[in-house]
Length: 556
Image (tube, rainbow, N blue to C red):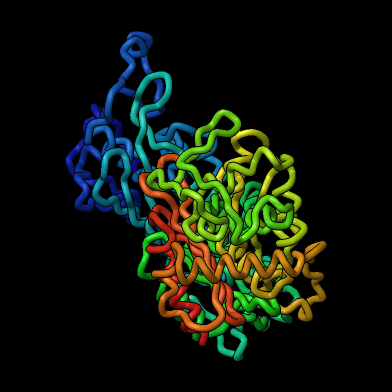
């Protein structure tokens, strides 16, 4: 397959290696010179070392020359189609060989040009250009990826850390790239008014459109085309990731699927998340469960539907309803809110260590007093919150049939300190904006309506149901608590311009390794309910709050 790339010391010359008529690696502005392209270092080309050399294990930070050298050897060999040489430049040759072989054989990608960018530490970005061929169809392919150079275990030699994302940034373990007849026909997704939903118009809907195709492609009457796609493996399927089309070589005939999305609200949601780094939001109609808008700052993963995050104090809406129902709290009765409360070996405190002396449960809810909720943990059974969340709010049973993949919330049974933490949306509790918008929708409607993006009438799906509702008295108190929080509590600033019948709750969820907590906000106004999260945003009232409030106002 042309000239073999020489290792250092084999009469190397200071010009780029040319494989046939294709330049293997284009030298970019990242310090990649002849050394990067042609090799260098103490190891032989296949990675073996002498016994004497093994005694001198390389340690310490990688030098710039080691990073560019290892990255260059890998990129040059991959571009030339020299799979074994490229795999030997990684820390997992077997896995690299399998995926790189499949890239040419199954994905049918050839004529590669790989252009490295500027290295940052051990990370090296690169641009890939090539062609995808299937029978008579040929199309160009281009995308950006990145690799990371690390010291190999055992001898410390610099090698490319092997991850499927090196080949394509959206590949996960077990995923495959395949070119051929599409597994499912394409779909033309429509909003509730009949307008077409596209990523050009609504950039964050990519994962939603993928999910619609996976669910309805074969049912909507379309015909498959030829395409390059990601076929998800078991791990990705368990994470509810759908197969993804990367390039169409020949168009199929799409079927049509109508959704519940409101075009003006969807556009407004897109604008709100675009202004933030890591934000997600969902808008629902409480009376029906129809999803009116969904948007994420991130394009690769639908956090709004599939995220699994601690919801922080927005979970206090659920906990408050349980405490009231059990007679452990009442809106205008005295309720403890000390600076600290210890339970199960942990010492819990409030934000800035505040306390409310002689205050009511209304005041504790509105100011989001942690200890007011955790102080009731000794009176509860370990499974009380889990059962209440499932029975009243329809969450945590993994039975929602939305029309696309979703994570339906999780409130595991816990004990001791983690059980106490779960009462304030920490511990093992995990939710996403769809789940928390549904919580506000349930409060507003008085009954749980499973959210859905595609009408169940389209395919006869049976929507999930909750086994019971809150008593009229408990529901009235819960609505009053959320209304008071929206006018006089931590949500008041964000909800100031929202008129009419409204309620809200803020949240901040601590996450290990983050300097700032995730900011949460859930609220309703009239027949609209919404929730959002800004990851590493800080207090929910100042980050997610304005985003959610703007959508409630936009909904009329």
